Image (cartoon, rainbow, N blue to C red):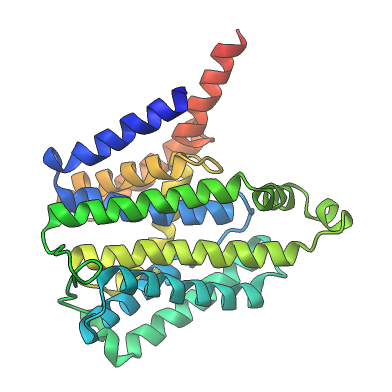
Length: 307
């Protein structure tokens, strides 16, 4: 009952938020909440560190933008199409890298992401270094105008709620329990008759699709897509979000995404010094909040209850 009440209060706050906070900033946070949740699904629950997660995020942004610019298709179908395209890329990446783990898996994903980066750089439809500009927001379901940021915020919010609910369902399903067991002790899981590779392939594919959903939404929020969305810096940023919020927790990536986007917005006026500030904050989190903000709060609550 308390959990349902909390969820209800959060939804009320989310619905009222654009009346008090700049809608584009809120939508940016929601896009990165989806992105960070997808990364957390892979690292926090499957134990797979992907150094090139931005390839799914950025590719979906370009595909969604291209579809919207060249066809009259409704915006939700274009967004889902971009997410599915990223899921397909994730499946291909999984087939290549799933038999590796640790730093080997991380470096394979980084190499593939750099390959995709240069493919997109050389492709004509992406606009190269100039990026893809003037992406239209076609009508939702073909009839609802979402050109206004205040109206489109609720579309992004609906996608974000659905994505987080999907991650929650995955993590708390029998599949999710096996995935966590693989993370903790893969040889033992294999000895019980399971095939860890199949579970990891599905995890990578689902994570890629969710990351693509975040990227597709971001492209429609700002109405442009650039190579920055595919770059290794964005991959590093999502790692920061997840670690800062709390790895292996459902709420952690949401908190981490909000904190990092807020920091970027507040520190942008300091130019390159903002990167130094972010690095210092990450260092402090690693030293004093090893479980992340949410992880430390949960641990504190457990200690209080045990007394």
